[in-house]
Length: 294
Image (cartoon, rainbow, N blue to C red):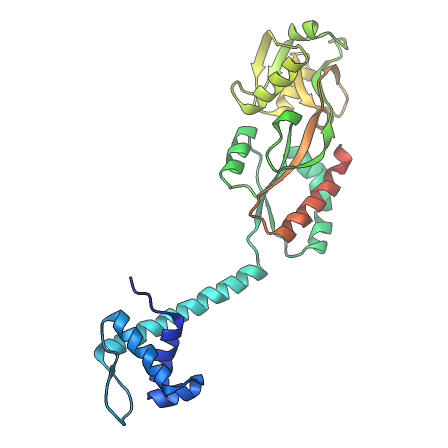
């Protein structure tokens, strides 16, 4: 692998343009012996002669010198293109990949986005479609998510995330499920849960177990919050949820909390690779946008 430097290429091309060592030395404001030393070193590294040595005459490139000149000029052009691309990158940063789940995006974040664009026009946010908690956590771990709002038990907070607030959590059922109930009574109720084996289901079951509740009758597994809530409204069973999700999907108030667990935390994850000024702006915005949901 060749180890020549930008300075050697600069000196070589200066000689090509000027026609001789002396003129190139004047243009570069260095001595002619210094120019000669640079070229001798470059030729030694390449293992070829770049110029025909003719005392008192203009420099003439050898066949190898002509080939190296063409490659050197192309190389510098590519370096300039890389520099221009980097400058454009600073002016137009890559859109940040952001996940904010369902009703939080529509009800709290989206209405305030005009303010964010006015305050930080350089920020470009690409809001990602709905995904399961399992997929979200996998993408965070793989570095595919830049910003995410996550609601989880306090003991399952993502590393490095910021606390946005807490939300009441518990078991909700239709009015015919009279409450409040004891842990033993709740354990015997028919439960509607997310799919078995998912991280969200595991979090719900652990939160219940901490309060002495171990569901003995799981009547249905369903991926979607709104579907579980509608089934609960029809009296098909009870479901575990945080209060804000219930309020979104049960606007008529058909459900009531029959058993409370410890509140869950709403947290903001920002990828450490996000530029610090952007991270600060996003943290401030998300705190302001979601403060009404605490």
